[in-house]
Length: 276
Image 1 (tube, one colour):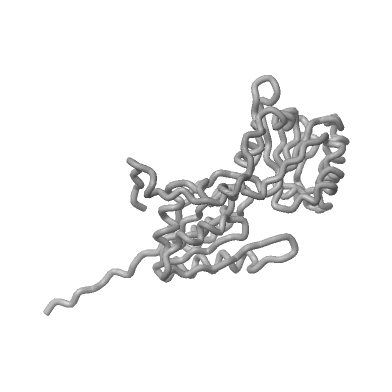
Image 2 (cartoon, helix red, strand yellow):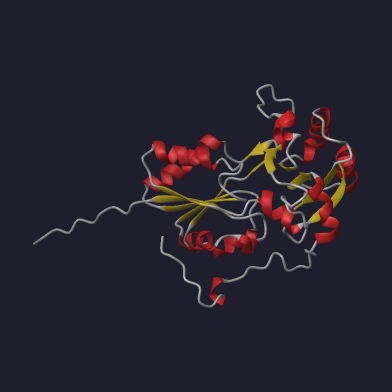
């Protein structure tokens, strides 16, 4: 009698961007893989409706981070992903925005590479682009802005090892600052000291693309005060440059209780999804 040998199932990790906050802004491939996953390791800033798309028998692990509190250190998250893939699981690492835009996706991919394990990066719609768009702010606009930069606001907190070149950033027509809500005053001071006009238009967008979206527009010099007066909650994005003033004309999104809804792929005729 011949003995059948079963080949162990080969695990794989998928680092997926969940998009900027609204559930149905996840990509088609990201949603397809999420629905098939054996394990889903997810962050804080994702639409909770996406969790309803996870298989009932799948393992769910929350590893969210916020200022001053990390559920798990990054090294432990890396080890968790590697461990589950080694077990032969199909692992989805679900991140807000895009995995490679301030998402530490590169570190997790390196950990998988070093362990000799397969992985795939599934890009997501970054909040750096989507949130300004939902506020009616194009990050480039003919005659106003031919370039833009995305920068973290954490680097304006007195870090001795910071490599952020605020002098160079002050020469770029549009700046999109992520995680800069608490450092708005410092950011404005550094940019003004580098030569950016205090009267430069600026906007702060809180909880963009969701039903809780709030937008304030002001000038660079008054940005921190405006944020404080509005008591804007995080997460929020700052946009600095002439294009920020366009929200007065182009603002199109009015939160109405529908943003959190999820568009089922089953309702999209003719859509074909490639297999993983």
